Image 1: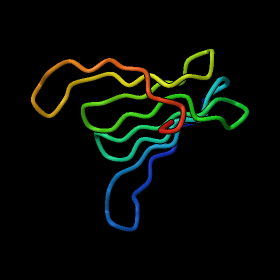
Image 2: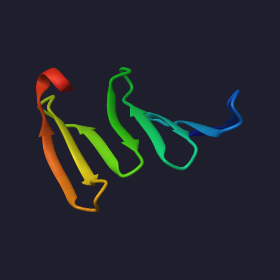
Image 3: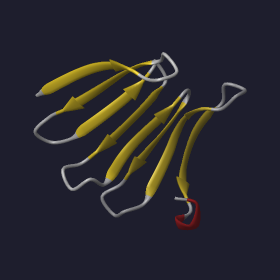
Length: 80
């Protein structure tokens, strides 16, 4: 595993993690993106929501809404 910490042009801290099974980019405390070895995105986290790619190719959104209610829903293909 390789971990690289850096700072973006706007001053935000960022971390890139290269592992045997995935590549992950974290920007600040609330933005994280992960890709598998073929370069396909499989997870995205922004603030209070997380999107994950399912084995069937579908997309699942889960987390907390602005009002604090629990969110768990499949994302339609045209919005994925």
